[in-house]
Amino acid sequence: MDSPTYVLNQAFPSERARLEALARLWDAGTMRLVEELGIGPGNRCLEAGAGTGSVAAALAAIVGAEGRVLAVDRDTRFLDDLPAQVEVRHADLLTDDLPAAQFDLVHARLLVAHLHPHRDALHRLAAAVAPGGWLLVEEVDWTYADRVEPDAPSTPR
Image 1 (cartoon, rainbow, N blue to C red):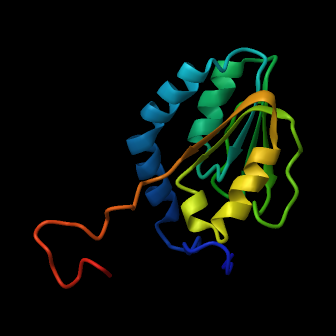
Image 2 (cartoon, helix red, strand yellow):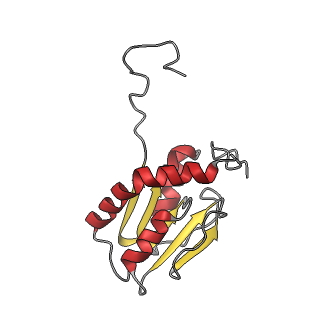
């Protein structure tokens, strides 16, 4: 599962626990953003870098039986027990094709920063958005990560 385009090692023994912790921390905020975008019954959503599927499952509840959710990840082993309207697909965002202009919402969280080149990842995600749809990318802002008080020799690392 190692890849020169993805910086995290998905063979990490506690990978499921790491992903579940991120879901507990971020899911509520993600779903508030999705609600603000007006995603609802019958919509089509793409969850890129689906992890354990927590967002895909929440999106499935929002779009209902008439909608659909495509959950893609390079590592699909944790994408189990998802609702019927969620399709799971093994895909590498930088090399595999995504359906073009098909989704009312394309969502990626804590993914693009780990893919290189970032610009290519964003272009590929944007290409999957249907006319009038939304691209929602959530990332940590590292702009000022090197400006920590007090200054310490380890800060730049």
